[in-house]
Image 1 (tube, rainbow, N blue to C red):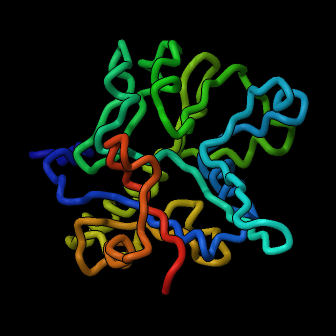
Image 2: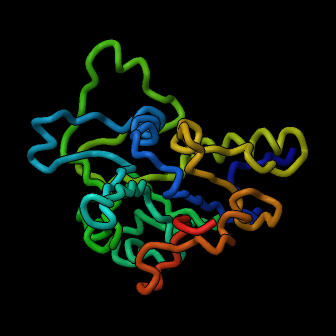
Length: 239
């Protein structure tokens, strides 16, 4: 009997991407908290944060535009950009970070030896080193997501675009003998955004909402001059 594996390398028709509309983002931070809960990211507390040992797979940056009294605050959610030409991948001496066929920049935790070269080479500063073994206070340990590995001290961590949700969506589609439908896979950050500023989907699907938004005249990508080809596209200004 032929056993179907969970290796999706035969099906690389997807290219997962994210569009973030900065004009919709109000900086509430719900995406950050949803990411922490979904991906078992520890909350380090104020004392550790003061030591610059923060831990978050997604941060919201704040900028000011204009001059007083016509100031405008702009919030910029910053997850891993899942670059097509990822600078973090080529410097890993043990190949713990790699590019999968669907455009995701993945991390093999039990291969990582914590040299932090990837973090130093990431122009977006979205990779985090796990400085400690964190223990959740009761009953918070019962909220851990069983679909996501709890990482150990001494390794690098990063946003995965909620890979576990991508797998779940593909499994459901496979069981039902169909393709993944637009909107069927939604990362925790996009799911919890109250203003729908974050849209996720398959950029290779021309009918998907994310593909339509990615073609907007308002689009831009961070540090485009570096040639990293991020999979996260931002929208700002204009109609």
